[in-house]
Image (tube, rainbow, N blue to C red; front, side):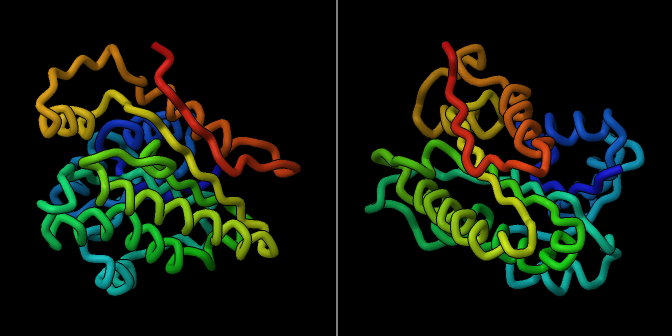
Length: 229
């Protein structure tokens, strides 16, 4: 039975991935921002364990995890949590920049650093759910895209560094996906939201699990998933 640590398991792509891993009997560790959220996640996936750590405060993650029980080995670390706050460069405040960089980039880097010993034991895998904005950007998306471009660089560098340890690293680049984040994006864009136009989170989960379950004689470095409509 494999053990996975998942961020962002409460909704969208993360919820789909967590549910499917749970259904097949894998052992789940779900990271939550506070104790209340941890209780909600545990109730939705009986038997799953929870950890509490605020991704918006990466400097406290080491202390937070040190107070909790971690496994001796970890088969995968799935970075799925993310935040978005659209705005022109001339309007975005440092608070908005820091929030997106902390959650989307700095905390994934810190969690990876803290959990690499367990991943090396199992010759496991790190999967970063990035975004199409991690490959190209548009007006109004600068801060979010910067965090995701940085996440791509993190994954690419980590892949080279961890190859000698047998740790695989994959980036998944979904296009617009029907999720609470996409609802927020449409609100910020002033557009009507129609979930049928966008990728089902289950489809992105399928792509992610394909990379995760690939036999050890191969690895998938990057997956781009685009709306088919």
